Length: 492
Image 1 (cartoon, one colour):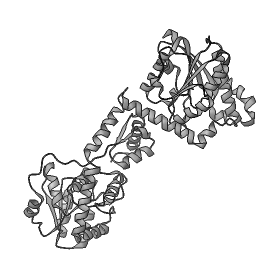
Image 2 (tube, one colour; image 1 turned 90 degrees about the vertical axis):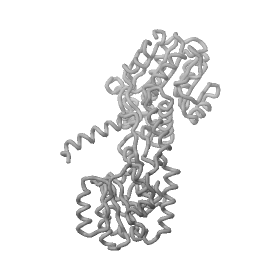
Image 3 (cartoon, helix red, strand yellow; image 1 turned 90 degrees about the horizontal axis):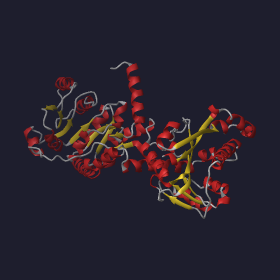
Image 4 (tube, one colour; image 1 turned 30 degrees about the vertical axis):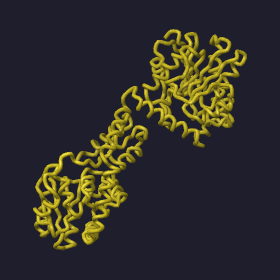
């Protein structure tokens, strides 16, 4: 056994790898749930389990030949086929055989491992009806499974066993043989769902004996369960079904792939739909909170002041990327009202676009992704984007969006970007965007950055003091959590 410090260090590394990986493949539903509970984002998790696969090469013998050769024609045959190590507990089967003490049962064991000798010794010492079969080729195993009347899958009562879904289970069920397994866990769930056998508590030899007796005395039920299990794994758990899922998992980590793009867009939709439907999240944006109102007022004043320094022509075209419900677009329309601006907006969420269209009935508002803007080159005088890049975890998608902004803005125009500069440890769906990252995103363009906005958790707690305290706190640069960046594409 490893020393505890080594185990602790390995677990730290494991968690970091899980959380930093672009995709994590779980081979059982239990592992998927465990990884999600440990903080791995659900959009990065893929379930690609073991499954049933009919062998291309048929066994060299038949189940009836095997029963005849081993003298099993008048026996109820129990079979375990697999490793004889720490993972599986054949002692409870030997306990059951001692309790039952019947002559018409035989327990066939096929496999090798560190515990084989102790099992052989116990079976000989107690005179138990146990046969240790020689190791055979994988292609022969299905015939032995089909030759058995009941297959046994006795997982040990250890924490990881609830996440086990071994290949031998699919060998058993694919052969049309009912299974007695220990539970709870993924193995037990599959058997119960398929009605393909019985499940007993792990480590309970008495319960195992009762289950063996129940099926041994009911050949018709064994037949029904075997048929049900074989049909279930053939239809629902064929390995070919999961090949496509594994291919999609691989494609999801290929930079620039359509699968990776769609996965990230789906994640963003879910996150922002969750924000819209969460009373807690909406409370953070409630302008009735004086601190929130002060943040919104200062933010817009900062944007307006920068726009006033820019030479914007008459009848300018203004695009708001990730426009939400249109609040910023409405404000910029009011700010430039004397110049009769044409307003445009794009957002992933249809509900947000519908709300924006009610607020701005004359604006051109589109449901879509900003990495594929449906506008001509050099079409806009001002492109506005707010807290978008901090919400995108895929760098390829972020670069594609920045590239589209540069494509659609005029050389004499500007891109105004408001985003977070400090990380938010309470929101795993966002990340800080540094000045260097902004320079990289808009490579070749001239970038002007200024910090702004008092850290929201602090601002929200100001209460009645907000009108006085917010300006004082805003004057302290380390307390500013966001930055306003103006990108001049002429230099690009």
